[in-house]
Amino acid sequence: MSRFPWEALFALLLGLGAGLAYAWAISPLQIVDAVPSALRDDFKDQYRSAIAAAYVSAGNLERAKARLALLDDADPIEALNAQAQRLLANAEFQSADQVALLSAALQGNGIDLAPLPTSTAQVANIQPTLPQNTASPIPTSSTQDIVTATLEIAPTQPLLVASTPRPTQTPIPTIGVPFKLIAQESLCDSNLPDGLLQVLVLNSNRRQMPGMEIRITWEANEDRFFTGLKPELGNGYADFLMTPNIAYSVQLSQGSDAASGLIAPACQTSSGENYFGGFKLTFQQPK
Image 1 (cartoon, rainbow, N blue to C red):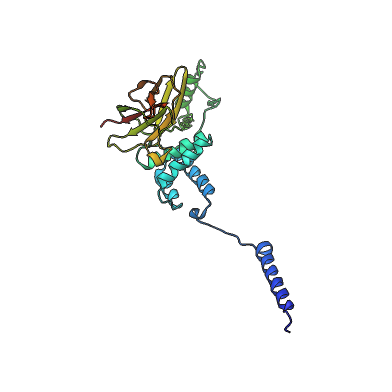
Image 2 (spheres, rainbow, N blue to C red):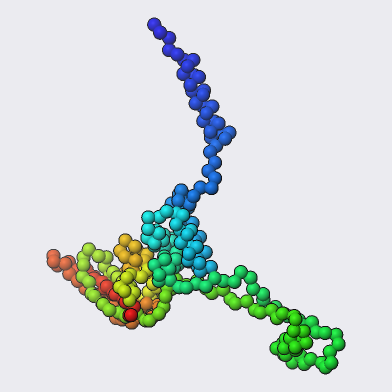
């Protein structure tokens, strides 16, 4: 009877264990200079948020495009819109606004953001130094008189200028001509949620516009929501759930006609069941 080769099996296991110990503990694999397209999905989201924040701060759209291209997304605009929706669901409103603004800019609907100066001098308790031998005293009735006199006596001394405050980020794309409410439809569809208010925003060429802020008010309340956060339904689409028996007023924050007195209509199915319908509003920017 042949004897089982225990020695060979032991040697194989010993070699396998030594190899794993070397690969995992002694000299593990280190990935250096990996391309952004190789990142995990959650890290890609962080990368897009950083790109959007840099765009809002510096206003350099071409640089933002070049950075986004490193992710190799099949559709960068759709990826940005989907991420903005996830950020909004997680209550990260500032990051969602920045990502939505970058998405709008890539489609030609964003603000032309001017780059901010890298450094500015600030005026803080300036005490001008006057020459020792002055022919006549300089009036000190006001700071403006002191600065004026200093410029006349020592024109080579530069006057420090107060810095311009940084503009606050806003999710509003191009304002332009106020939008027109071109359609208002009352909908009775039992397949839709009760009281669903749908809003569609188009530009003058009837292309859907993402990142458009919508203002809705009712009684003493107000809310705002944005188009483009549900790209599967359209870049210019947004919706809101109305409470039955409450009148709402809807208007674009960029300026538009107002749709007022919107109360979820009472509807009935073919089998006699009652439910609440909704509305579909379409805004378009005139040429």
